[in-house]
Image (cartoon, rainbow, N blue to C red):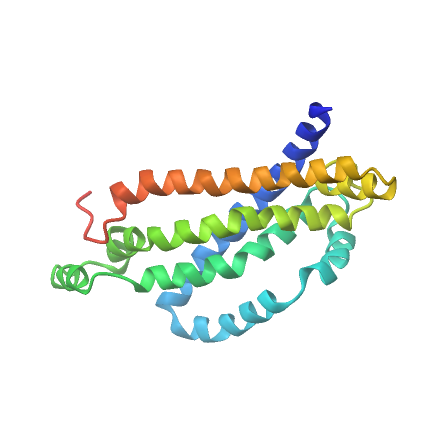
Length: 210
C-alpha cells in the first residue's frame, strides 16, 4: 500500500521541515546577536547547553499536552532538536573569517552590517551547510518522537509505527522505518547538492564584490 506510506511520510516530512527551518533560523539569528553582544552569549550559552542535554523524549509528552495533538508539537520538538547544533556551527562560522579580508573592510570603514553581509556570512556558509546536513535528518527524529507521544494524532510515520507495533504488524513497522531512513538520506543529499551550488558561488571566504 504505497499510498499509505506516502501520505504519512508527507505529514512527518512537513512537520520536520517546518520545525527545522524555525529552529535553524532562530539559532542563526541568536548566533549573530551572541557574536556582536558578548554578554548575551555568556547568558544564553549555558541555557542552550542545558537544553541540548535535556532528553526531549522525556519532556515530549508535556509539550504535547501544552501544545495539543496537532502539528505544533512536531514543530516545537523538531526545532528544539536542531537548535543547539545549528547555533554552535553558526557561531563557529561567523568567527572563521579571513583576517586579511577583515582588515580590508576595516580600512574601508565598513559597518558591522556590511562586514556581516559581505564577509562573515559568506565565510560561514560551509559551517551552516555542515550543520544543515546534521539538523535536517535530525528534525525527522523530533517529528517522529512527537508522533509517538501524541495518541490523538492520526497521521505520520511515527503514528503508523506505533499502531502497527501494537497490532504485531512488523512488516509495516520495518517499512515505515525504511521510509524514514530514505527521507533522512534524501534530506542529507539535498543539502549536500545545495551546498555545492551555493558555497562554490558565495562561500569563497573573501570579500564579496556584490
